[in-house]
Length: 121
Length: 403
Image 1 (cartoon, chains in turn orange, cyan):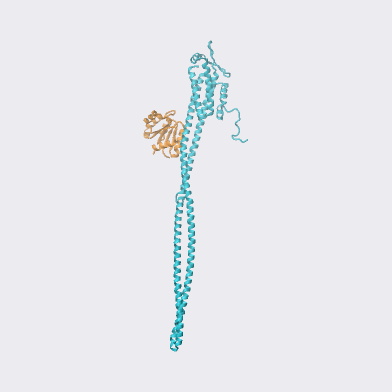
Image 2 (tube, chains in turn brown, purple):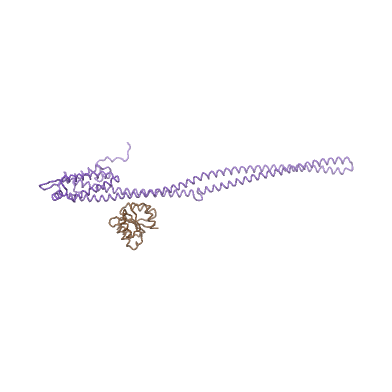
């Protein structure tokens, strides 16, 4: 198996689409349906990159990224927001948190793969 | 009706309009029909309320005195105990709306669940197709590469054919040169044999002349008599020599003729063989050229197929991008429907608070009225399942039937 990606999104459809897009390219995709579950998975299963939605129940994407970034082992792990949010304000908020990229939904598989290959050469 | 309750009704209306918008956008026929009906009912109710009196005044006055009619089998009413005004609110209609809103929420959930299932199934199918398409394309490409490339491939075969054709061409030229040299040698031999024959004829002539000379010498020796005897002997010897010379010349000429005949026959045979070989070479060369010309377009066609196969795989990938985007839009609709379901449930709860009757407490008559009104619009089995199933069995036949 190749690089390990953690996809945190409350939509099972999005998680499935991400998985279907990345599995044939030899990525391993882990899934979590909210920020809290994602944080727990990140702690228990070291991953190479996180794809995080913003608007989620229990713990939103910003809170999740902030929590994961605070973990020493994830200080340099790239994180990308995969969200319907597109405002500059939100993007600035993400940049301040230290995320590496921003993909607006609906995403195209090619675009997702391109960004992942840039972040995980 | 209090201002708060008025707001609730307006919120319900807003939700219903949202449901209708989504339903219309996604061609969800059942919702698209149920929702306007519910909206109209609520609007009619509001309209009736507004014609009684101004809302705040009515609300303030009615709120303390509204009570629910305990018997719900007949159309219930909220009655005022005020001795002055007794405005009536059809409580059963409110409860009917309560049931209708609950049904609308269930329909939202139904559509949401079905949409999710459909998106999942479609995604699995599409990505499955993509993988299959990629595999097929890859296999085609590899097979065609094997067919065209490598030592046993078509490209190599064409090259071999060209090489062999060139070799045959050279061989043909060599045979042509050989035949020409042979013909030249035959000509030289013929000239040489002609010269030998000429020499032989001259020797034979010389022998004849010598013989005549010897005969004349014998005659002269006889005429001389005894002293000429010795000369006569010499003349006889000379005559014998001339005969022998002639015999040798004739034998030599005969031998040369035999040799020449054999050589000429051999040359003719060789020339014939060379010509036959030349013809075979020419035919093989032509065949090779023909094969080469036939194989070459096939190789080009194979290359074209490889390119087409590659383009098709790229096209499928591009199409997958748009399909994936569409699936996400479907997912958005599902999420909106989920939100609508929550809002509808909340509105239903508010209506329950307003009527002070929980959904489970609504009488069977009222519930049936709401169900009957909604079920007039039902077109799919799942909708019927929400209200306990279709009452008639008209759809129990086979799915496909020939009459």
